[in-house]
Structure formats: structure tokens, C-alpha cells
Amino acid sequence: RFIHTVARCKTYPGGPERFPVPDAKVDWKIPFPGYAPVFYEATVVKKKPVWADDPDNTKSITYNVVDSVHKVDRTSAHGPYTVTKEGHPLNPMGRTGIKGRGLLGRFGPNHAADPVVTRWKRNPVTHAVEYDKDGNPILQFVAILRKDCGLWALPGGMVDPGEVASATVKREFGEEALNALELSPAEAETLKGELDELFHPDSAVVAYKGYVDDPRNTDNAWMETTAVSIHDSDGSLLDKFKLQGGDDASEAKWADYHPGMKLYASHTMFMAIAYEYRKRELQQ
Ligand code: RP5
Ligand code: MG
Ligand code: MG
Image 1 (tube, helix red, strand yellow):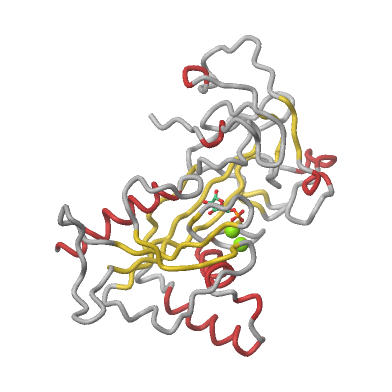
Image 2 (cartoon, protein in one colour; image 1 turned 60 degrees about the vertical axis):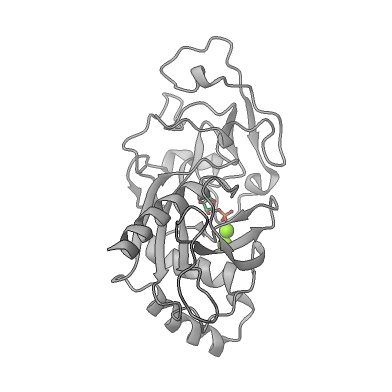
């Protein structure tokens, strides 16, 4: 069974030390006498920004359903999660060593969407697919450098209230990998059309949907995502786009995927799934 580790990192990003949780005590079902995680909510979250729940009005939140009051999907891809008698949702993957929301806005699941945009590495002259020394085709993916932690990652971001994940992946790909927020309204309109084409439902494949082992997760708030795979099978689909980091990404580039490479949160796992899928497709 999967056991989260990044969500138990020693120090919470920009916050306190987590209460140490050994592997054997992650599961809520295992008694852990003396478990005393500190409560932490970042200043940005306490300021009640629009993207965060109001801690003084938690009675209006309905868990395990699409919350119609706030237009927020509170369901988990892993099925119903526990809400304590005090009204605190519990992380479905177990203890993290921190209570409260930390840097996350929502109590319970915080839904994101991640575009996994790939192509085969090709010889620039012959255009033949390139293989590594073990004979495996080399997949390239659009990677961004996260400003918050300095780690390479897939582009991706939070699903806005009322938004659907298929719209979030396009918007976030535009913002983080193409710097769309700096475009003129006319350029943004053109880009929107191009992204609709790139992320057309006929070619988009959901590679993963569920929990993300994110460093911001807590006992009461966690990340879940829909990772959408888009593959440029002949190496020309993405020619019209110029990669440029934007918003919370300082850089964007084509990167070679290597099994086991270090990427943010669970992104290496999403890449592994997309790789196996696209390799099968290539070999068919
Ligand atoms: C990860 O955090 C998700 O996989 C997604 O890539 C990302 C969303 O958060 P922000 O990029 O908006 O910080 O858990
Ligand atoms: Mg973003
Ligand atoms: Mg982001």
C-alpha cells in the first residue's frame, strides 16, 4: 500500500517542525498515544484570501460532496474520508504531524490539475525517436521550475471554484509554461484557441486521479489532482508554442524523463504512468 513520505517532511514549508510519524503509525487505525501535532496555518491563509475557507464559518462547509454553497468539490478520489466530531476532515493517507491547513486554503481535499505534455526525443536531422542505452525510447516532458521550493515539476495548479479539471490544465499550462498572464488580450485569445486544440478531449488521457504526496499536506487538508496526458506523437504539434515560465514558475523547458528522477511531490509517479502508457502506444 502507498504510504506518504513528502507529506511527513521534517519541516513544514515556511512553518514549524512536524511531529515525527514513523511509517508504522501513519495509518489512523493504528493507535498512537502521545501523538501531539502542532496546529499551523500560514499567515496568507489566516488573512482569509478568496481561495481559502473562512475558519469562522466552517458550519457552511459540507464534506464528501460537491459543496454547493462555496462551489468547491469536497469529494476525494479515494472515497469518503472521516470527519471528526469536532468537524475536522482527516487526511485519507494518514497522519502528517501537522494539524490545521498549513499553506492550503481548503479543509479536506484541495483539488488541482496537472498537464503532462510529452513528446518523444527525436534526432534533429532524421527525426527518428532516440533510445537510451537499455533500448527504451526517451520521453521529453514540459517541466517548470517552481518558485516556492526550487524544484522541477509538472506545470499545474488549483481548480478554481466552479471550474472543471479539463479547463484548469489548459489555464495552468498557459500561465506556467507559456507565461500567458503577460500576453495582450488579443494574444491571449489566440492562445486560448490553440490550447483548446492541444488539450482536445479526443487526445487527452487522464493518467492519474487522486492523492498527491505534497509537502503542504496536513492531517486536515491535502492535495489531490487530475494529471492529464497530452502527447505530441509526430513531434510537430507543439512547434507553435514557445515555452516560457510564468506565474509561480520561474522557468519552463523540455526535459528528458528518467525513471526515478527527482520532481516535486508525486510528479515522478505521474510521469512514470504517462511513460508506460505512451511507450505501449508507440510499440503498437
Ligand atoms: C501539487 O501541487 C499538484 O500536483 C499540482 O502540481 C500543484 C498545485 O499547487 P500549486 O502549483 O498551485 O502551488 O500537489
Ligand atoms: Mg498556477
Ligand atoms: Mg502551480
